[in-house]
Image (cartoon, rainbow, N blue to C red):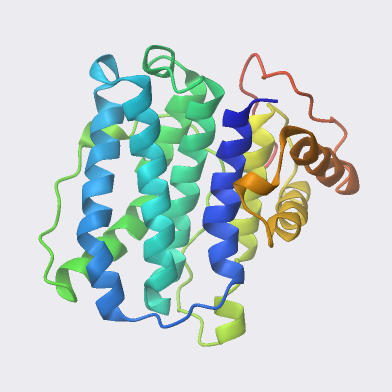
Length: 261
């Protein structure tokens, strides 16, 4: 178990689940508009780091991708409810990219030819993700008068990606329902966690794992979980959810394909 891998999973939960389980607070259009330029800048930096892997350093790659993941989390926390579903889809996509890059130690050279990284990048070409990003951009353009940023077409590669949550047709009007993750979001998180250990899980096992870990992480932070405690929670979640393969501390040698595709 490495600190990097622990960090990659905690990014998914502390940046995604914690925002969703907490009350939305004083969400407003003004707050979202304040975060808009920061989101655009972080996105541009991450895309540039990924597209220019041959000229990107390990430090820049990690800081850029974790930076956009954190920024999407912040934007989702303060945005009106109509943006929460699209931003959840975007956050799940970036979370999978974090997991894939973490699996190669954020090494740009290895990442450039790694199939798991290519798979994570390809998710951004999927309709659900591209539509979610368009919804966010439309909001920032129309409601915040923010200039629409240019998107690098080379950021997304072709391939097969992990399941990602679909955007709801209608935004939820129930405050309690809005503050929790959708079933597809729990499922996407569970698949992402399993992917960090190279373990294939089913569509039923994935959300079970995510919910178990989400409950465990709900009152903690990265500093609260040392390697031993963290791995105990991971193994327990897989055991309780009936996953046949138990995670180990060894990094997987090759990516696996989950049965949920």
